[in-house]
Image 1 (cartoon, rainbow, N blue to C red):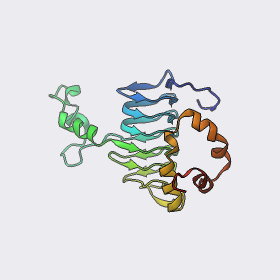
Image 2: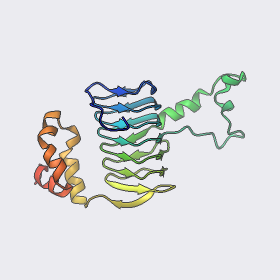
Image 3: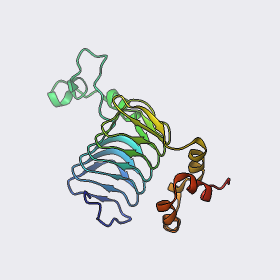
Length: 209
């Protein structure tokens, strides 16, 4: 996967060293080496590079997740007298039953990525964050709050750098919703994806123009 030359197939592809539990992987998806995905939806055409950990996430179509990203890391219980996980993984230490309420809270606070989102190398997305379609998260960013569609954020904590396109172009892309096109239509439009900028693409394909 690292070289980018592997021919993909409609069935999901995962490196043998990847751990995938309780997930649904869409068509043309790919999961890299040493990744761990749990309780996650990875929709069509999205890929995850090596050394990522993703828990309780819903990831849209055509998302690009760079290496060493962490999506929805576990939180420790700040209000409690002890931060250590013996208070909620109690059975491991022979101290009693696990705290099911703690784990139910985590599963309810899933991360949502829209379509065509790009997470840069080493980005961390905290629980319950929603990242809009077409957004970009810079390498090493720690995202603590929702990210609007078609914006670029970076830093610790992540802050807005700029919008990718004018509002009219953003709205046009959302109306076009090319991420829902069939493979046949994507193949036909490939020269335009390769040669047109976003504004020109919207002028050609927006149904309201």
